[in-house]
Length: 161
Image (cartoon, rainbow, N blue to C red; front, side, top):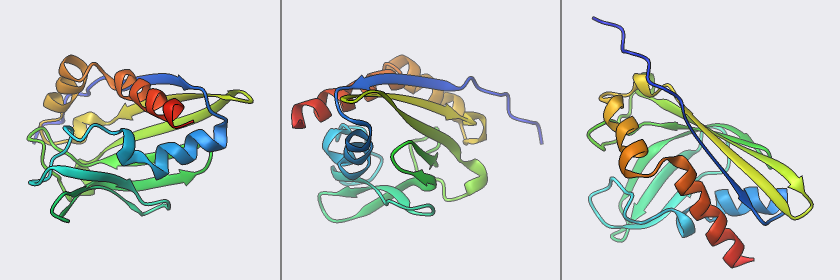
């Protein structure tokens, strides 16, 4: 069996006009309010996206029909500074339950002032995914990269005030 070719780490960053604690809470507790419903892998249209607030918790979508589809697991839960989740979605846009096939996404929240928070993201180990290059290329070429998603979070968070 050949070793997968390492894929570049994907990064993203945004700034949100919210205090650190509030930014982390909005990001994690209201994930489905800003994550685009079109970006789902379940059979049903997505009604919500949820991050369970603990290590070992699930990161998943809930369909309009009540069905659930996992995306990964919470590896690190360190409010209000750090969240790490597995990305267990393969290049066929299907959930892969094998943790050996998981990439990781680390979110870091940093206070840049009393009312401003910087958010950075690092999506690493995409070579572990089945057809990981397809995921990499889709995020970069069609999704505009992770910064586009984080900027959407900042826009929705600021509108919520």
